[in-house]
Amino acid sequence: MKIDILTVGPVQTNCYIVYNEGNSRALVIDPGDEGKKIREALGDKQPAAVLLTHGHFDHTGGLDAFSDTPIYIHPADDVMLMDAVWSAGSAFGDESPRPAATDYVQEGQKLRLADLDITVMHVPGHTLGSVAYQIGDALFTGDTLFCRGYGRTDLPGGSMEDLVRSVRRLLKLEKNWMILPGHGDPSTLDAERKYYQ
Image (tube, rainbow, N blue to C red; front, top):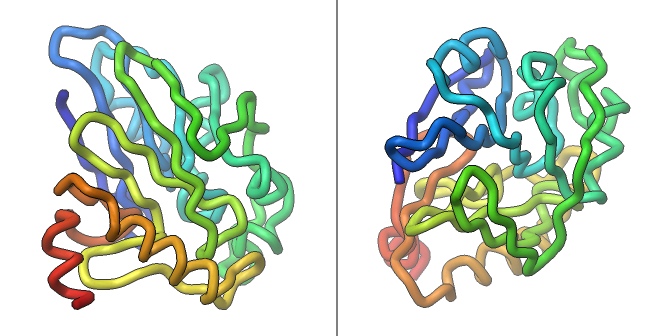
C-alpha cells in the first residue's frame, strides 16, 4: 500500500492519497483545500472514493474537485457540508457550500474500495461524527489524535469528555499502527502511548 501526503489550505491540512501499487484507483482522505492540486497529484489514477474523517471546513474545502466521486462521511457530521456555522467555516471566512455526501459510514463498518480493506471507527469528541479509518497498518485519525496532541473541542459538536474517551480507545488498540493525523507529523500508536503515560 502506498500513501501520498499533501498539505493543503491555510491551516495546513493533511490530505492523503491511498492506493495499491499498480492499481488504477485510489482513495482520497480529507481533501481540505486546493482540489485541483489534489486531482493533479492523483496523476493517472481515478479517485474511487473520498473518505472524510469529519466535516470541518478545512477537511472538505477541496470537495468541489470530487463532485463526480462517492463521498463518505459519518451521518452526524453531514450537516457540516451544508452549514458553514456547524463546519466552523463561517468563523474562518469560508462559507462555500460543499457537495453532498453520497454514502454514510458507521462504527465497525467494513468497506472495500480501490482494492483496499477499510475499517471505520467512530471516535466522537472533536466533532459528533469524527471517525478514524484503519487501512492496512495505517490509522487515519483526522483531528482526533495528532502526534503528541489531540483535536480541539470548542467548536460546534465538540466534547472534551467524548474526545478523551475516543483517544483512550485508540491508544488501547493492540497493534502499533502508523498514526496519520489531520494536521502535523505522522506518529505511531506506540509513540503516542508512551507520550500519554
